[in-house]
Length: 180
Image (cartoon, rainbow, N blue to C red):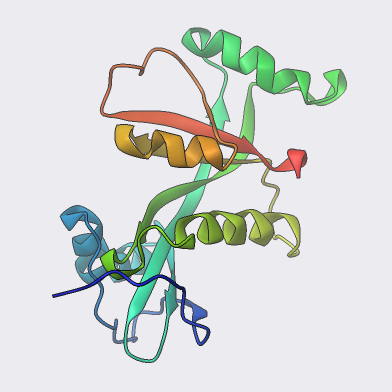
């Protein structure tokens, strides 16, 4: 049985999942997120659908996230958010769509819930696209947040894209990397 800890271990490292890797044990509060890491992440990598990164020690995965390409497309039902988004982009650069990276999965092991690991991962992702040389442009981070995760993403400066999904189980959210 996992008991919660009060600190993130000092010996953790960020590791990019590779097809031939053995994935150390991982258990979050969400069964679907556990299943993705342990049973689907390598298939997504092999199919070129998503890349998964794990924070781990030698014997356990503390947290992980998966990234894939995405874009924000102008859509009439998203007009207020699109206008807000467009105001941050010079007129001569405005388009009907903008390049983005989607955070497809983000999970923290039960044992490390509530110690800041989720925010650390979000910061890592932001830094990956701000501080590292990219092979393609990326202006936004996007995600589909479960309703109970909305406060976490709002705390990390993500915004909802539309009100059309306000009663859905998940909400589309974005973060503008130029605000860093």
